[in-house]
View 1 (cartoon, helix red, strand yellow):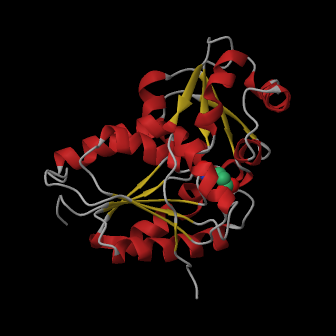
View 2: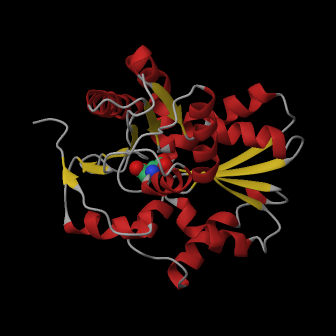
Length: 268
Ligand code: DGL
C-alpha cells in the first residue's frame, strides 16, 4: 500500500455521497473512487446475505482499481458486511465503516447518557450499534427506531416542507426518543435533513452526522500510517451499477454539486 493510491467509497446508491463530500472537503489531496450500487438499492430492506454478496463484489472492483482504503459509506452495508469485506480485502487495503467512529465518539461525548438511533430496518434490526455501544461499557442507554420512509423521502426531494415535517415528527415523537441527549443519524441519507431534526429538538439534542466524524477518523488513520497523499492526485470517479437521469440529477443533492456518473454493471 502506498500514499498515492486512491480511496474507494461505496454505498447502496448515491446517499453515501454525503460521506464522500465530507472526505473530499477534509482530504483534498486524495483521489476518490465512489461506487453506488444503484442496481440493488435500497439495501435497507435486503437480507444480510444479499448485502454481503453485493459488498464483496464492489470491494473487488475497488481493489482492482488499486484503492488503499475502502470506506463502506452505508450503515446497512457496514452492519451486514464490514467483517466480511475486511477479511476479503485482507492485506490489500484497509477497510473502514461508518459505525465504529460514531460509537467511539459516543463513548467520549455521551458516556452515561440516553442516546437515540434512527436508521434503516437492516441497520436497526442487526443490533450492531447495540453490541458496539455495550462493548464500550460507558453506561450509554441506546433507544432505536427503524425509519424506513426517510431515505426515499429524501431521494424524492422532500425536505424542509410539510410532507417531510410530518414524517419526521411522526418518527421522532416516538417515546423511545423522550429525554435523549443525542441522536445518531444511522443512515448516510440523513445528513440532508439534519437541520430539520435539530429544529425538531429545538437544538437541545446533539444530532450526530456520521459523515464528518468518519472523515476525521479516516484522516487520522491515514496520517499515522504515512498514507496521506502528497502527490498530485488523479480525477475522482463516480461509478454506478445502474444509470438513470434521476440518479444523475440527485448527485447534486448529496454531493453539493452535480458529478458525472459512469455506468459500471456489477454482473454482466
Ligand atoms: N445509505 C443507506 C444507509 O446508510 C440507506 C439507503 C438504503 O436503504 O440503501 O443505510
